[in-house]
Image (tube, rainbow, N blue to C red; front, side, top):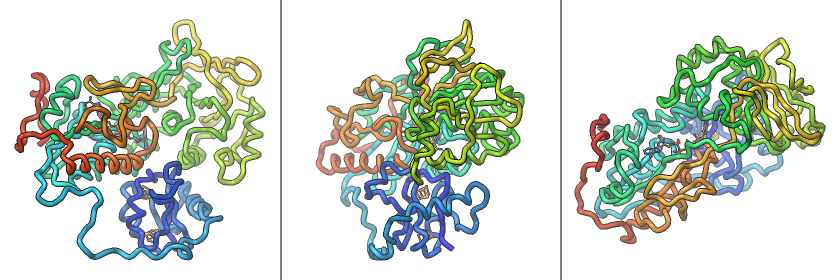
Length: 506
Ligand SMILES: Cc1cc2nc3c(=O)[nH]c(=O)nc-3n(C[C@H](O)[C@H](O)[C@H](O)COP(=O)(O)OP(=O)(O)OC[C@H]3O[C@@H](n4cnc5c(N)ncnc54)[C@H](O)[C@@H]3O)c2cc1C
Ligand code: SF4
Ligand code: SF4
């Protein structure tokens, strides 16, 4: 019985290297790796050895006969990926493991003095960089984060009903105790220490500070009370220390979420979930209590374009379709939506909605009685958030002009951007630090990785190859003698007075 990859796959490709018969694709060197929602096991070639399941950090791989409920669909989803591809067994030689000495392509030559490297940010990008530094070099690492709890978006972004995905945080956390790593939490670069001070105290500094600022919609009414960014909702249900426990008011029956990306789907899913299903998860206590008393009966997700262009990934949409006690509906107001869904060929994005019930949303009436609903409304670009002194609706433009959707809460989920860090260059258009393969332009010994390097796209696993590229640049620079020459002793982290009082983890 073959294995299959399921919803929580974050495409970090750990399983690819573990598979002895090369039956997991696309691999990082195949062209569709950069765009795939997940990886797939070829059931024709899989020899049922289970090595991939052992390697997977998010428990995404299971034997097909162990898949139940919504996960059962993934047997066919894995097989479908290979429907028109030749069997890898027929085209590729088997993978034989080498039993010689380990051979890494990012390695510091023997005898090279130990580098002191600071990594700023404990999210996935920072932790993949730390992992590479500890495994492939003899560097001593100082790991810094502005928050007192590490993990970045794995801790404060990933939704609490995705416990397998959150478990990747445990894999990262095992590096925190490494003897060549010292950790400084509660230290914010730009406030408690500076870019120049870090550069003076280290051979190299890697910034993995993410992209935490919500993108603005740029429409009137955006600042009204009850118009909030998805970052607020996500921080609220994850217990972020900078988001108030009462930051999200659930007294409205209809919520509009602007956006169709995975974060929009996370928010919609949590706001409509049965609180009993969330009770055993890592959800913050005040958020769970608020959901128990919530008036929300309908969440409308607004997409600017059609279902063929929706930003969500296939696994996340499939999870919505299987939500217990929640009905998924497609708003049929614009005929282009139904036409695109009906015309979609199997495997195309819009085809995911074939079989989902369609109806014309009654925009001004309260949501109908019955189970809670998630309504996908496409071809609806928001032009204003309306209301006299707090949100009462969203005006959208479509083929037939402008229409208003009544709603008491609007969540803006249209992406994230980085914020400038004093002392580092910043591209205000992309919201990233300008770089070439991770090297910060004009600042030898300074590197970036993750969302601050490439923008706010890609799941957790995408940061692994991103970190590998940055580390390759750092090691090449070290070996070529391009890093700043420093006395060979580890010096204390230069901190301003208040940060010296922050607890030192190690
Ligand atoms: C809401 C949400 C849910 C997601 N869910 C999933 C999912 O289920 N599966 C998946 O595969 N991907 C998911 N992703 C994507 C994934 O989280 C990102 O790919 C990943 O977190 C980006 O990693 P990063 O390290 O660049 O940034 P982050 O994870 O944001 O880490 C940045 C770190 O830098 C620290 N920092 C920032 N500024 C400073 C400073 N000045 N000084 C010191 N420290 C600083 C921050 O505190 C933070 O810890 C989600 C993203 C979001 C926004
Ligand atoms: S079970 Fe073994 S053969 Fe099958 S995909 Fe996993 S690692 Fe490859
Ligand atoms: S998360 Fe990584 S290891 Fe797990 S199935 Fe996906 S690519 Fe493979």
